[in-house]
Structure formats: C-alpha cells, structure tokens
Image (tube, rainbow, N blue to C red; front, side, top):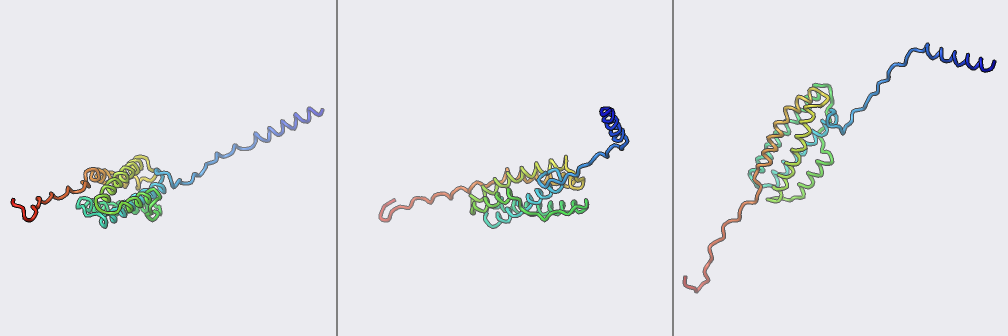
Length: 197
C-alpha cells in the first residue's frame, strides 16, 4: 500500500509538472567590453587614444625637431588626426552614443614618454619616425577591422573613411628622411706660419 501511495504521489507530481507552461528562454544581456576593438566603447577609446598620441607626439616634434620633413609630417598629422577625432565624435553622436573624451591609453602614453626621452635633433627624428610607424600600423589594423566587423554602422563608415588617411600617413612615415645631415666638408689645411707653400 505504501508503494502505491508513493507511486501515486510521484505520478501526481509529474502530472503537475507537465501542466506548467515551458519556461521562457532567458536572454543574457552582455555588457559591452571596453577592451574589445570591435565594440563601439572599445573602438572609440582606442581610436581616441591613437588620435591623441598622433597630435601630442607631433606637437612634441614641432618643439624638438629642426628637420623640415619631420616638421611637415607633424603638421599634417595634427590636422588629419584632429579631423578624424571630430569625424568619430560626430558619428558616435549620430548613433546616439556618448563618445568618451579622447584620452591616452597606457600603451600610447608609454610610447609618448619614450619619445619625450629621445631629446631633440637627429636622435629625436629617428625616434619620432619609429613611433609613427608603430602607431600607424596599430591604427591601421584598428580602423580596418572595425570598418569590416564593427558593431555600429555609423562608426564603421567613418572607420572606412579613416583607413586611406592612415595608409597615406604610414607610407609618409616610411619615406620621411630622418638621417642626420652629412657633416660639412672639412676646411682646407691651414699652413703653419713661417712655412713656404
């Protein structure tokens, strides 16, 4: 009898369970990863830092370099990266996003600190060229990847517009002449007084 009661109780419990409607599938809300370069928060932070590095390192070049090629490049970088920051801010706002203020991320700050430590003159020029090659290769990958796979269409469009500018900067950085100028020719030997020449 006891077995029968347990079986009936179990059957009643199973019947009650089968009358419950199936549970709604749960959806997980995934927070945006600020370090993911394919998500708007990460992309905007990295692009803003990249632009700030270009602007600040170029301002430093205008103070530390006498090389006309380096100074011309610095002026171009300041103008173009100021424009790309404005384009990204406008695209973010058009998509209903609040763009973060452009701030140097630790990696870009470290590169800027290395450049400051290079001093001035030809040593600075070579460090500036190397920093621009490194920074523009990183920026090219960032903007190319986001333009292809980013999560916000307005930002993808702007990233695609920035890519050719970055490519041009990279080519310019590769071709800029930063070699120290050749030393002036040695003066002709001066004869000693009293000698006949």
